[in-house]
Amino acid sequence: MELVPPVNHSTLVQNAVDIGVGFADATYVYKEVTVRRKIGNSWKEKSTVDFGSAIRMVAGYTENFMGTNKYSEIGHNVSRMAMKTSRNGGEGEPMIYPSPAHESSVDISADNIVDKEYGGEIEAYCNDFERIFEDHKEITYRYEFEHSTIGREYVSSDPVRNTQIMTLDLLKVELTRRTAIGATKLTMAFGGVNPLNLKLDVVEKKITDTCDILQRMDRAKSIPPARYPTVLSTDSAWTLIHETVGHGVEGEGILNGTSFLRDFKNQMVASLELNVIDDSQVPSAGWNEFDDEGMKTKGTLIIDNGELSQFIHSRRTAYLMEEQPTGNGRLSSYLSRLRSRQTNLIVEPGDWSEEEIIEYVGDGIYIGPITHAQVTLSSGEFVMIPEYGIRIRDGELAEPVFTQMVRGSSLETLSNIEAIGDKVQAYPTMCNKNGRQIAVGMISPIMMIRDLEVR
Image (cartoon, rainbow, N blue to C red; front, side):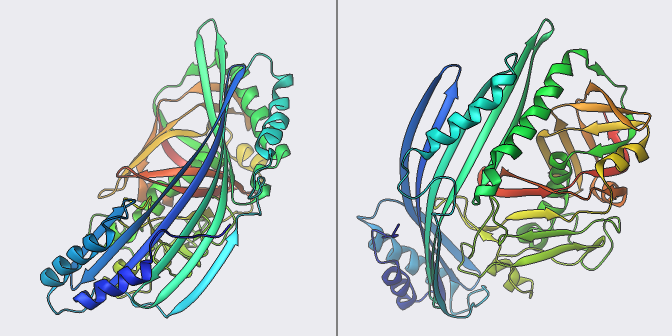
C-alpha cells in the first residue's frame, strides 16, 4: 500500500519553526482493522479505518501537543499553537535530543498471514483454527481475529523523515468449561507481525494444554497463604519482569524521580541469572523499524547478569538526563502524547529445562497466566492475579489450585530468581499505562523464584 497523508506535514512543521519554536515534529497514523469474531455458532466480521495526526512543538522547557483528524483548520491551529509555544518557551534551546537527518521507509505489510488485498485469508485461517476444538467438545470457545494494517509517516525539523507500513495479526481466545460448581474461563492471545507467531501447531499445543487444565479445575482447592518456592509460567514470568523492570526503567519515571529504580543504574538489582532486553527489531507485536520520533530502533540491554545497565528513553527524556535515546518514544494513538514505553521485552533463556526446574523445586506452586498485574512504581511493590495455579509435589506437577494473588517487593523478588528455563515462548499482549494502550511482545522462558508470597 502507499501511505498518502491528507495534508503536507512538512509544511506544518516548517510553519511552526518559522514562527519561532525550536523543534517541531508530526506523525501521521493510518490504521485499517478487520475483525472477525465468533461467539457460539455465529460469527461477525467488521472493518474500520481511522487516521489522524499528532503534532508536537518544543521551545525551551515548554512542550505543546495536538492530536487531530480534523484537517480543515489544521494550519490555523498549528500556527496558533506555535505562537503560544514560542512565547512561553522564550529563546531557550528546545530540550530534545537532536537526531541525524535521514529519510527512509519500510513496508512489511505483505509478510503476514493476511496479504494486503485480503482475499479471504482470515476466514480460511479461522476455519482451520476451529478444527482444533473438534477433540474438545466439552469446552466452549469464543475468539476474535484482528488484522490491522498500520501506516505511519514522521517528519521533523531535524530534518528526519520516514514512513513505515506493517500488518499486525492478533488472535484472542477465551475458553470456558462449566461444571456443577460453576464456570471457569481462561484466556490467551497469539500473533504479531510474523506468520510464525500464528502457526497452527503452536496455537494448538497452547490450547490443548489449557483445555487439559480446564478439565481438572473442578478438583482445584485453595492453598493456605504462605511464601512458597514458585515456578512462573512463561506468561507470568514475563509479566513480573514487564511490571517491575520494564515499567521501572521507562524514562519519564526515572526523570521525575517516581521510579524505585531511579538510583540503581550500574548496580545489581536482580539475580545473576537474569538478562533482560527491549528490542523492537524482533518480529513480534512490538515491532518497529523506527519509533514514533523517527529514531532508528535497536536492542537495549536493560539487565545484564543482574546489573541494571540502561534505562529506555524517548528523545526528550534522553536529552534531559544527558543519555542516548534508545528508540522507545511511542504514541498509543495520534490523540495521545508521546512517552518512553516498552516494545518487545525479552527475558533471555537460561540453562534449565522445565522438568529440571519442577524437580528442583520439589514442593511448591506453579503459577499460570496472569489476568491483571500492577506495580507501585515508587516502592516497587507488585501484585499479580493468576488465572490458576498448580501444586508441585514430589518434583512433579500435581493438581490445580486456586490462587488469588502473587505479591512482593520487586528488588527482593528479582534477587530471589534461582533458575530460568532454556526455551522461550513469544506471545502478543497489550500494555495499558494511564489509559494509553500499546502492543508489546511477550517473550520469556519459565522462571523459578526461591521464596514468593502466594495467596
